[in-house]
Image 1 (tube, rainbow over the protein chains, first blue to last red):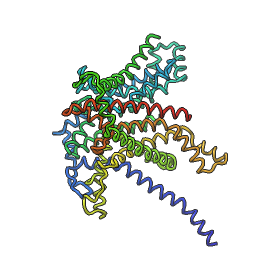
Image 2 (image 1 turned 45 degrees about the horizontal axis):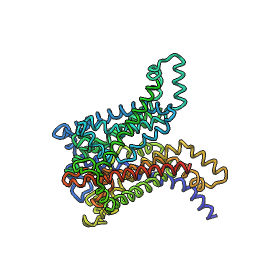
Image 3 (image 1 turned 30 degrees about the vertical axis):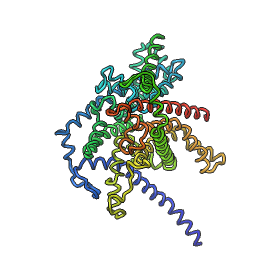
Image 4 (image 1 turned 180 degrees about the vertical axis):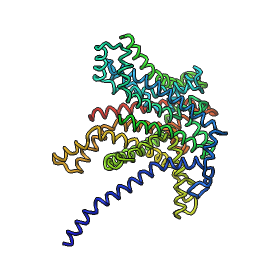
Length: 271
Length: 281
C-alpha cells in the first residue's frame, strides 16, 4: 500500500519536476544568450571598471552622448557601414537573382554552380592579401569603391548559391504561363516573378548585408584602414585599449543585425 | 537570346573564377620569385625555406586542432538543443532568443570573450567576489593561452546557435517527428529511433553546412588575432602577418608560400569531404 502511494506521488511530481527543470533551463539559456549583449551594453555605459568590482563604477550615458560630440566619427562610420552594406546587399542580391535563374535553366548549370563555391574555400583575409596588388594597380585600394568590389567578390557567389535552389520547373512554368497570356519578358519579371520572389529576395538581401556588415579582415586589407567601417573602428579602439568605446561601437554593430533578424523572423519567415 | 545567355555565363565565370585565379596566380608567382619587390627571377628558395619550417606545420596543426575542437562540441551541443530541447527553445520568447547570437560578428564575439575570460574579466571578478580566488593571478589563463581556450569559447558562442537554428529547420523540414513515429510503430524503441533515425538524418542533411562552417573556422582571422598567442598562430593570422610585414621584406614571399599551401590544402580537403558525402549518399 505504502509503495503504491509513493509511486502515485512520484508520478504526480514528475510533470512538476519537468516543468521546474524546463524553467531552469530556459533561465540559463536566456542568461547565456543575453549576457554578452548585457556586458557590452554595460561597458558602453561606463568609463571605469576597476578590479574586482563586478559592476562598473561610473554608469551613465556619457559615452553615448559623445556620439554627437567628439566621437561623432563613430556615427559617420556607422553611416558609411550602412551605405557599404546596403550597396553590397543590393548588387549581390540582384546579381544572384538573375545569375541563379540563368544557371538553373542552363544545360550545364549544375556544373557551373560548383564554381560559386570556390571563393569560400579560402579565408577572405588571405584572399584579400593575394588580391590586394590588383586593387593597388587599378587605384582601388583605400577607397570605398575598392572595398565594395572586394566584398562583392565574396557576397555575389553566396547569393548565386542561395538563388540556385529557388529557380525550378515551377518558376519556369509560371514564366511560360505569363508569356502565353501575352505578358512581355519585362512584365513577367516586374509584375510576376519579382513579387512572388519577395521572400527569397529579402533573405538574400539580409544575408549579404550581414556578410558585408560583419566583414573585417578583407575590408581592412583592401581599405588599408582608410575606409573606417564599424568593425575597423572596434578594432581601432581595442588597439588603443579603450574598451568603453569599443563596447559602444560593438553595440552599434550589433543593433542593425538584431533589427534585421527580428524583421526577418517576424515578417519574412511567417509569410 | 542565346547570345545573352552565353554573355551571362561568361560574366558569372569571370566574377567567380577570375579573382581566385588572379589571387592564387599572384601568390604563386611571388612565392617563386617571379614578381614582387624582391623578384630576382625563378627561384625555389622560399619554398625550400618554408616547407621544412616547423612554424608553418605547427600553425597548420594548431589550426586543425582549433577547428575540430570548436566544431565538434558545437555540433554535438546544437544536435542536443535542436532535438532533446526542441519544444522548449522553439516556443514562445525563447524562439526569438536563439536567433540573438546570430547578430554577433566575430570581432564582437572575440571582444566579449576577452572581457569575460581575461584575468581582469567578468568571470575572474565573480570568482573573487565569492571568495574562490584572492588574487588576480590565481585566475587561470583563458585567453591568449596555450590551448586556445579563448578562441574555442568564442567559436562555440557563434557556432552552437547557428547550427542549432539550422538543425531546428531541418527537423521540421525532414518531418522527423513523423519519421520517428513510423520507426516506433515498426518496433524501434524511443532511444533506437533517436540514435538510428533522427541523429543520422540531421547529420547527413547538415553535413555540407557543417563542413563549410569548418572551413570558415579554419580560415578565421579576427578571433585568433585578438584571443590567440603569438606562437603558434592560426594559419590566416600567420600568412597575413607575413604578407603585411613592412620591415622584414623577406617575410613577404614566405607569406605567399603559406597562402598557396593553405589554399591548395583547403581545395583538396573540401573536394575530398564533399566526395565522401556523395559516396555516403
